[in-house]
Length: 506
View 1 (cartoon, rainbow, N blue to C red):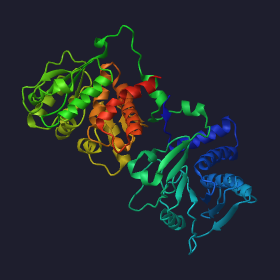
View 2 (spheres, rainbow, N blue to C red):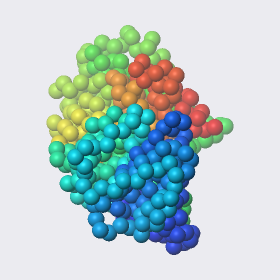
View 3 (spheres, helix red, strand yellow):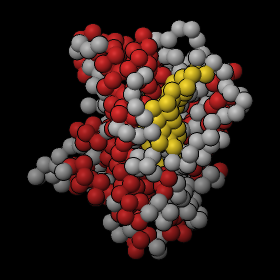
View 4 (cartoon, rainbow, N blue to C red):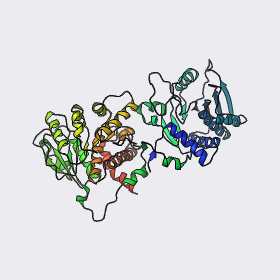
């Protein structure tokens, strides 16, 4: 099953559905959520730790009060600052305020306005933000704005409950004017918030954790969404076992069009990755300048020699190939662009285009209409902007990516942290694997090969994209764990593909 990403409104309905159908009282569901936070905090805290909890008047503040009470009952020193931002406090907030009043080890302060002299926190204090929850829809002003600015200047560890105060869950903030709590950790309930996945919000969200608070599985399963967060169990369910009497002809024949005289390394990486993923056969089409090195560097591949000594300039006969991947290290020469156009026009099955193939397309956008349906494009952010257009923020980029995938009936993989796969049916799949060590030259070439290898094995374009992206990140995670992020090279990802396969198939 896929992990769904719900909007704030859907999460609110999930809360109420759970309250009505479990059934459970609202205050008890809050207690359950607070206890999950308490357990996480206790596991992280040292015995000498103290806590400062800042609470707004709504249910997010109610969560904070319940967490503060549990910490104090476990003998941690706790101080609570209640911000009187409104005359209207939620019912669950009021109940938790009543419950905490007689608890030892907790000191409660109520602020109608930020004091002239701000509190000074001890070095061993963890500061907990429970001021505003995920329902916030406008920028913070006044008293909480001043307070959050002050908190952001403090060196103590900071934890946000559900979402950092000031951050919107489902839309962009104005980064030039918005004031947002900058958390080291964010403890969110049941689902990641959509905004957690945007690179510009990393400095606010920090390391986010999803805590299962037991919201109704029935509601979650029956409620539709267009956004999914990929899990190991889901990707595992897509893998196809091999039959005992299988032979190489059952697993396709990839034509890899890659590399010019200066970038044959990209061609070798992508070709090796395709073979390591299980393609039955692979032919690498290459310029004549590489003909002496490839039999040594890539003995498992067959070779197709271009008439040009430097770059891709003509297409070979295509009938024997089941799938075509094009782009890694290709270059953007005029003869290459001309040959790419012919390749697109003559391809008879979904293609995979990456790197310089995308850069050529960005200069010749009318060719996009000739791409075979269900083709896969794999741009990084820079290539995306050249191909689709500049955007102001990640939310706008996502909307453009969805429209692009739908218009051309292709699968668009926008690479980066939380790589996103956009489908012609306007669904979005977010990858959960990978690490910063993979930000190295050749990593994208490896992904191209991995997806091509899956296409050859008769996986659909969507299946190949999902499995390829997830396993690329998983192999990278395994490599980084063994070798370190700093020393990770693209070739290491290929070396860990077998381990990633074994982990999924075990």
